[in-house]
Image (cartoon, rainbow, N blue to C red; front, side, top):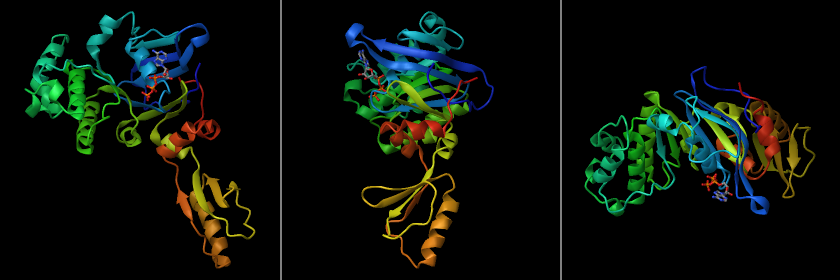
Amino acid sequence: MSEQLSGSKPDERAPVIEARGLRRVYGEGATAYEAVRGIDLDVTEGEVFALLGTNGAGKTSTFDLLEGLASPTAGEVAVFGLDPVRDRRQIRPRVGTMLQSGGLPAELTVTETLEMWRGTCSNPTTVEDVLERVRLTDRADVRVAALSGGEQRRVDLACALLGQPKLLFLDEPTTGLDPESRRGTWQLLADLKSAGVTMVLTTHYLDEAEALADRVAIMHRGEIVVCGTLREIVDSQPARITFDHPGLALPPLRGAEVDAGARVTISTHDLQGHLSELLGWADDLRLQLSGLEARAASLESVFLRIAEGDRTSATTAVPMGATA
Ligand SMILES: Nc1ncnc2c1ncn2[C@@H]1O[C@H](COP(=O)(O)OP(=O)(O)OP(=O)(O)O)[C@@H](O)[C@H]1O
């Protein structure tokens, strides 16, 4: 079983995705590569779950398993209580998927592309509806080949929405979009969330996860290193106070370390208390602390610590255990 957060599901709503001990190995023998190393995941109805991670962490490989595009080498996964590979026909009408590269036929117009997709859906909405939602109504008669990269991404999203899914898989949904289009997509996804659609997304934009996700999992080298709500993840990490060593004996500050560049770093879960202590000491000595910075933890700092391989501080921050 992979490491996983000890809970923090928003409530007891119906499980939509349940995965236990998922593994995915590419190749065989000496060249075999384990891209997914025994992960556990729970996503409940109406939840937005973001899977973050470094390049090659195994996010897309995990997505493939959840979507039934590949069978796990080991472990189990259920989507709506069904097997994503074996029961694909039953699951498919309830699921919309936006893959990393849509592979849309370049010669068709946007409307023709969407009409074609619409034909594969059992309970589709109209082409006009999805065009409006992804704000491409004025590009309806343009050939896909003539669209910008960001517009093509929005056609991918429109295709995923055509079947009125209850569960959406979004693999980097806003990559290549300009800031305004990204905001538009966020608003659309927030509206879908309000309508009760469950979403699993991958993204390299941490602000996207912060804006949209109820819970976040950070993958690294095939494993989930931390998983929880943003608040849980951030609160569980120490804040940092840094300053240049003043060249005289420091007070006994807990958690203080001095690096080779004579920069003092204090890691603390009591930022205010530690800062007051430090400033009181400096005031008494009429000392100006050069380069003084105090920073609460952020999703970015947690991510960077994981990416840099500092698994100890990251994992102890959010306790791991079996999920319910
Ligand atoms: N078909 C394959 N055969 C062999 N190795 C593969 C295959 N597909 C992916 N991998 C490897 O598995 C690892 C995980 O890849 P994956 O695409 O799942 O990562 P990712 O987290 O989605 O990365 P990115 O953020 O760069 O898209 C990578 O090291 C990749 O090279």
